[in-house]
Image (tube, rainbow, N blue to C red; front, top):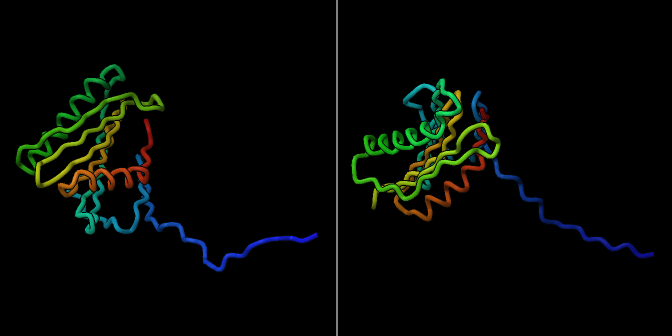
Length: 164
């Protein structure tokens, strides 16, 4: 009987390093390229990715709302977040997409939008509205839509909200 086998002399690829940040309302395990920044508000964490010239802000607002109010609350949250963008960076922000839908767990609503300040910035938002909190994940990127979307899609899986 002859046994055949192969041996690799190439060391196995190391899994990418991440920096775990565990908070009461979410877990965030970002790659080291995302550098922590001093937050401007309570219940907020902020990061900067210098290579992509992108900023990430995750925040939580605690509320007391009935489950019946979530659809209206979702509309209001998106409108307020878009208004905050225009206030923080004045200009003609254009909303490219917005959506409100039930979260797959049934624990609340999932909110999202994409907005652009043409030639200057792209903003991508993912949020959750539950009867006890609003959880916000906002990324601000350079004006390249495709690069912004690729970075957002690569970063969102590192964000694990705790619902409700």
